Image (tube, rainbow, N blue to C red):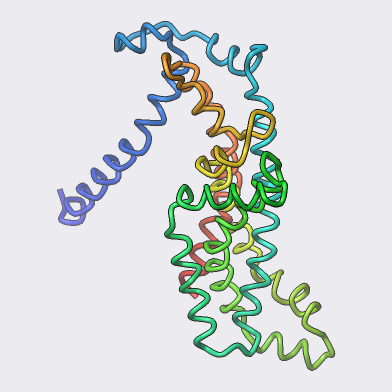
Amino acid sequence: MSRRTNSIVPVHLALAAGAVLVLAPIIWTVAAGFRTQISLLMGDVLFTPIWSNFSEVLWSKTSDFLLNYRNSIIVGLVSTVLCVVVATLAAFSLNRMRWPGWVVHLFLAWTMIFHMIPPVALASAWFSMARAVGLENTFTGLILAHATLNLPMAIWLMAVFVRDVPKELEEAAIMDGADTPHILWYVILPLITPGLAATSILTFIFSWNEFAVALTLTMKQTATVPVAIAKFAQDFEIQYTQMAASAALAMVPAILVLLVAQRYIVKGLTQGAVK
């Protein structure tokens, strides 16, 4: 065995171990959705797959999971569009407008600090504000909260992509008589399309998975998927198998988005890192 092969084997083993650590909980959750409660609690290794958990979650008269699914899609898509639009304009302003350097650094530092605060620490404050203006238990309140939560990350990402656009292109557009909106639309946006795609996908996934704020700001008609999954754990009973089936169904949109847009995410993130 060559020296190069000897050096590669540990790397492959480490990658395989990492893949097992990542995939094992997902595989266990999906498998639990096909088991009976008794089989799961008994810890049987071999079991006969059943579909009743998924059918109860999706079609039972007592289940609101499809409504929760629709709510998550609405909140995720609208908050993503709002967040990316604001982040792109903010990134353009920070990089191209004549702000003092300390203002830019202070603003980016604030976004980083805000991103570090656990969402659950802000949930009670947002509930009070939403209630004061009549936005509790509404899509609008939750969309604004999710957009605010994801905005710091989006601004940081978009700031990198906007910064890397050559200023000579904008100067040439100005020489041709273009104003700021036309420069942003016709010069900047076409060049940062990978960044827009990567930021949009990450923002949607973060909104889809958010739990603490959604639990605080929503009720039955506006609850999202993570809130619905948590409600399978009651005071006197935990429906493990139905909870696992719901979790498996909740993974579908995120996995589809990642599979379809994987190349945009990799291209966008690496482009911003390499330039």
